[in-house]
Image 1 (cartoon, rainbow, N blue to C red):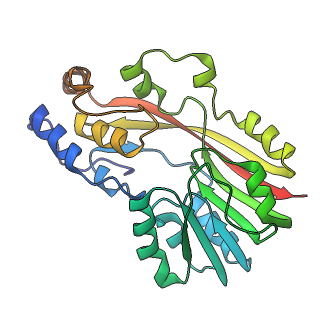
Image 2 (tube, one colour):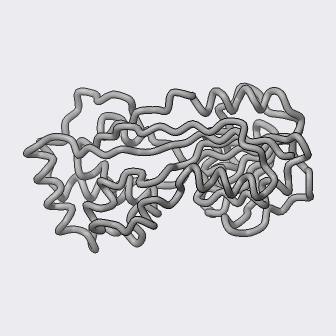
Length: 262
């Protein structure tokens, strides 16, 4: 999302106009430029895309798991001789292929929960930005000994102010899912030594109800089954709240994994 709000204001636009615009906006890929002036999210201090680019420049074979539309991988200044990405959602597969093929990277259609379609020890580096679920056993399998898993994960209770606005208070097992220490244990059990694990909580602001609609359509696991029609009453209440009190504030959580295969 954008890092600052521009001068445009949604205050003069109707609820129906804002919601209709957001409901019609395309959602494929991980390009968040639509949110410019509509929402903000602070960025983690470690600068994942830059750091990932540095790692890619130092290896000969790399895999980017759940690449989305390929935007983060495509931002790297250089790619290794063997550069592969996986993605499970067909519209993203097409978008990532169009973006990455000119860079010499191959995009493989592979479901999120399926075994990675590569031989043991095929890669020096595996990367991922916001995987739905990190399958550490598969990640460790496709890494060569001494190879590295470098990834930015979504943390526990991320944007739960928004989630619970629509779904109500969530049980602790849901709130604590994606716990970084639990993931550390899973990674180590799979044969990875966690060299570094950093976590941060980051402020988000939604300036109009349309930004909320587009976010929930794009990040579909936040409110599963979200549609405008199903939540129209709650959305209308949120529209009034933002108009009266200002931006809806939430907090994302992120953690940075740097692990090495034994």
